[in-house]
Amino acid sequence: MKTRVVIVGGGTAGWLTAGIIASQHSLKKTPTQETEVILVESPDVKNLGVGEGTWPTMRDTLRKIGISERTFLACCDASFKQASKFVGWSCGQSEHYYHPFTAPSGYGGVSMAEHWSASPNEFDFESWACAQGTICEKNLAPKIPQMPEYAFSLNYGYHLNAGKFVKILNQHCVENLGVKYIQGHVEHVLSAKNGDITAIALTNGEQIEGDLFIDCSGFAAILIGKHYQIPFKSKRDVLFNDTALALQVGYASEDAPIASCTIATAQESGWIWDIALQNRRGIGHVFSSDFTSVERAEEALLNYVKNDPLLASQPLTPRTIKFNPGHRETFWHKNCVAIGVSAGFVEPLEATALVLIEKSAEWISQQLPRERGAMSVLAKRFNTLTLQRWHEIVDFLKLHYILSNRKDSEYWREHQQVNSIPESLQEALTLWRTQAPGIYETNQRSELFSSASKQYVLYGMGFNMEQKQLGGHGNNEAALIKRLRNETLHTTEKLLSGLPTNRQFLSKVLEKNKIGKL
Ligand SMILES: Cc1cc2nc3c(=O)[nH]c(=O)nc-3n(C[C@H](O)[C@H](O)[C@H](O)COP(=O)(O)OP(=O)(O)OC[C@H]3O[C@@H](n4cnc5c(N)ncnc54)[C@H](O)[C@@H]3O)c2cc1C
Image (cartoon, rainbow, N blue to C red):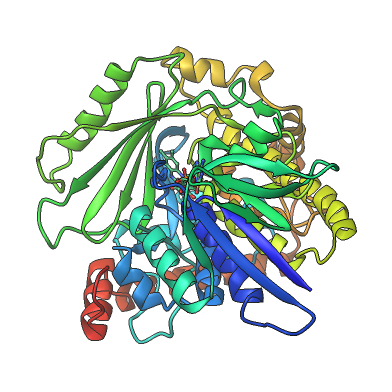
């Protein structure tokens, strides 16, 4: 039986979904099971094209889809992302902290976080328990050029040019994975009696039939929103930011360092992101229009750029993007499932959009329904899982704000008001006062944020556990902690002396392979 999957939208969500499903299904044609993937994209509606930071999951996604890392690095002006660096979020002892992609040493076996909390020392938690922040400070790559593609010394994701990423995904999906690409604007939907979508109709009169329709149409949400009217749950009462100003700025010189992390610098009414690619930096200000004006936010953004001597001085006009933070009440309705911005969007503080796209598409691909009855069961499960993930994202982002000591503006003071903190997060904080987030934190296998991530943010922000609760540790455990700490020191030293800078790595690998750019 042939299954037709019709994806509406050719942004990152559409092409990643097409690649993930097609690489698993469309080339494995058997007489009983055949999957055709069709992607329809409007020539009249532009992609969002901003998302530039990924999680380490992207390595696995690219490998599975069948794109070589060198091609990806060359075609997308990409660089490595090893962490997020939070500057000025009021971090207690230090003015910045790292949330790295590598877990603290001993993770899963012993709680370094509790030991660190029980005996505060001159080191911040991250550099005490992990080498990655120190490596990021020196703009070093997470690996040496001789290592196989996607392998690493330190876990990493990427910074990428979103427009170019869509281009290579499109080319690869069509040429190598058999995805059928149709340019056309979806005008309306044709439905069956049971409410399922039978076909989408384009403005040129063409109708495209399908079994499963995936809405990747971005803010337009033409299937899940316009057609099915699935309600949108705004989270603006928790996460206040609703506007972004985005810029692309060249380097002052060709050999300017390429940072290993996304830098998020707190501002009066929001924060500024800074993402380093090979040839430029993507910089933008996310803020709340309830607390500041576009003019004031733009001034802060332009000052940030002006004060950085590593950036070229050039005339700059930011692009404004308005958004309502939140997500759909349900994501899979009848035979239509939403992925990407059509499903929801919140500020990119932890770059959660692309990872959620990857995970949603992977889930659907793994469980691709072969008949209509199965689809209803899967839809129910997908909705439960995805809603849980959105709650997790909202809680984790809010955590960054409520731990802040900043009281310098209404924005920060309001963020710390109890009535803006979800109950689930308040509960978690009660727990974390007496015990560090651990691997038994949730019962889910599919959580997005590990307890390691929660530890990095909590202790990076100077969260104190109640000392009286932190009992003594036996001699054996004390010896283990000492050994782990020495290992971290040793690893840090070794990596500091052995890793190339990002620029050295990228020049070497891209020169050696002489890969043409798109
Ligand atoms: C300021 C900002 C910064 C971000 N930073 C990050 C980040 O660092 N990391 C991260 O993971 N994410 C980030 N994101 C999110 C990321 O950009 C998006 O999740 C990602 O681009 C996916 O978008 P999309 O494909 O869902 O939608 P879009 O890119 O908007 O694509 C929508 C597609 O639907 C098509 N379409 C629309 N209407 C129709 C129609 N009627 N018929 C046919 N086709 C139609 C359009 O032509 C387009 O191809 C950021 C977002 C913003 C706004």
